[in-house]
Length: 243
Image (cartoon, rainbow, N blue to C red; front, side):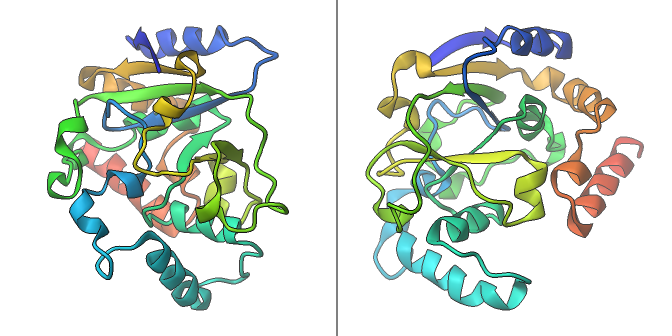
C-alpha cells in the first residue's frame, strides 16, 4: 500500500480525485478510524473470539440467513447476495466495502459525529489502530468474481471484486462494490502489489468541515442510508450540530 499524503481540505480532495486517469478502473473506500492495514471486520475481531462455538464465521452467516428471511420482502438468490446483504447490515464478514463514487467513500471517512468515534477496543486488535481517518483508492486488474462458477464465497480462493445486484436500497445508494479475499485476517494490502492501493490520511481537525462540504453536494446520512433509520440519524446529527 502506498501512502500518498494527507488531505488538507475539500478542495484538495477534489484535486486529488480530478487527477485520476480516466481509463483506469478505480474503487474508493473511507474509514473513520485510520487502521494501518485493510482488514475485513471479521478479521479484526481478536483471535479469542474465533473459539469454535462462540464465534464461527460460517455458523454466524448461516444463522443470519435463517433468521433474516422474515424481515425481507424478497430473498437473495445466491450466497454472494446473502453475504453482501449481511455486510450492509453490520454482520462481520470477509468483505470490504468500496464504492465507485469517491464522495460516498469520503462520507464514510468523516460522516460520524465526533462524539461517536470511540472505538470498542476490547473487541478489536488494539495495536493496529492509529487514529484520524483514511481515504483509499484501489485499482485492481483482477477479474470480477464469476458467481456462476464460485457458488460459495467463504470458499473463494482469490482476491476479486464482487459487484452485487441491488439487493438493498443501501447498496444502490452507496454505489457499492466489495473486495473478497481467502483469509479475512490477512490485510488486503499484503495480498496486492504496493501501488494497487493508495492511502490518504484525513486529520481529525478537518473532519467536520469535510462533512459540511459533502452535505452541500447532497451526500449525508439520509442519502447514504435511504430509509427511516437513515433519515432519523441525519436529523439527529443536524440537531446536535446546532445544540
